[in-house]
Length: 303
Image (cartoon, rainbow, N blue to C red; front, side):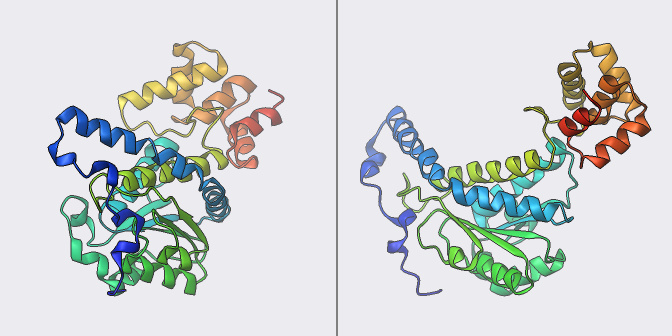
């Protein structure tokens, strides 16, 4: 690993279109960045089969109480944390269900710990510390595809039978050779050579958005395109909950508020109570019987 030839990584090649960037005006610089960013979505689109495959693997294991764990270093690790942190308030899952690990630990979230990415022993120690198990999915994130901290964690995960996925922004990545599902979004030369927080970082964020969103949709956390398992952690989300109830049931806000409270702030339960006319206890049983899928539960009630 120490003899890696960085010149063979697409993210480390000099971008011929930005060789004169240090002579340009502010508008010309941001225009160049914007032009390069437009290539990211196309790179991600080429990975859709692998992304979908990983979504299905995560869904299957979450149905067995498994967890989704992201692991990365530097920008990759921080993007993993950002995605994991958004899942509980948006989809009502626990902070245990979707987690993230970063080389260097929590201090690395706000202060660079560059040498931490080479610590293979810590990569294994970190996944052991969270009790990584067979039903979990470990997704290793490394723009360069060769971070030792991530590689060691993925190898350990494979040893214990945990499903592994990888996300890199180069072809033929080292982590891709280890993971059961390898995603390689080849975003090409960066505007600033080697600055993978840019195009590679954007692709990483897009793909993690797809993974977590698609998994939550498949698990019944969404009705039509509404986040029906939203947690009421602030006034905005409480009002959003009322609005969702109103949209689905066509009731007014006052009725939505009333049933929201009757349902113990559970949007799906409130909707089912309004549309079915059944008691809270009966609706809870129907939701449970349909694995929390509101659309299926409404159908079961003939609604």
